[in-house]
Image 1 (cartoon, rainbow, N blue to C red):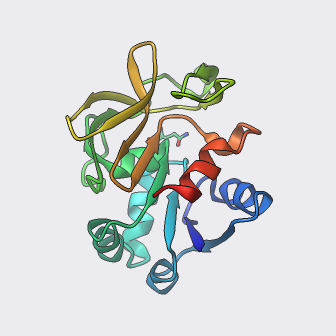
Image 2: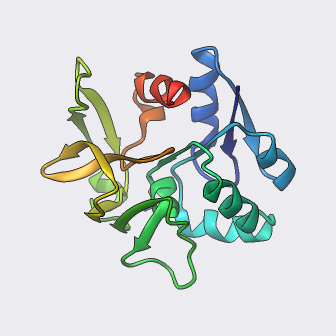
Length: 188
Ligand code: GLN
């Protein structure tokens, strides 16, 4: 199994490193050909507006929409969550959201870069709690009934799953804790 990490902008290198550390093959995806070779995909944190434009520039928008419609297992963190959401409340005009997870998100809803924070995230059955790193993180403002909320912070979803799509508001690749990556790599 090979996990592709979308490598247009943002924290892709750190995701790749975590997978390599836990013995899962990961590689960087920048072209439609590389996307076609991925068994699973990570869309990293970074800047969703920039990633959205670079998807267009690299001819990846339609191929990614097709793979997602075909049930490609995908992990979207932070900006990746914004790209996989069904609705971006205050997005940039024309910014893509692929609707893999039926959530509405507000960009930068947890505040600015200087308001970044860490919080312990209770994921059902995981002991100890997962160390969540939030950096200009989106707030999940609403989630449809098909969305499984796996963890909340102050009553708001921060880790969600809908079928093969998993999204987090926080950056698991910055956590020195590989449980989200292990779980995603093994997801059935
Ligand atoms: N606020 C950023 C955006 O809108 C996401 C921040 C992040 O990925 N850490 O894309």
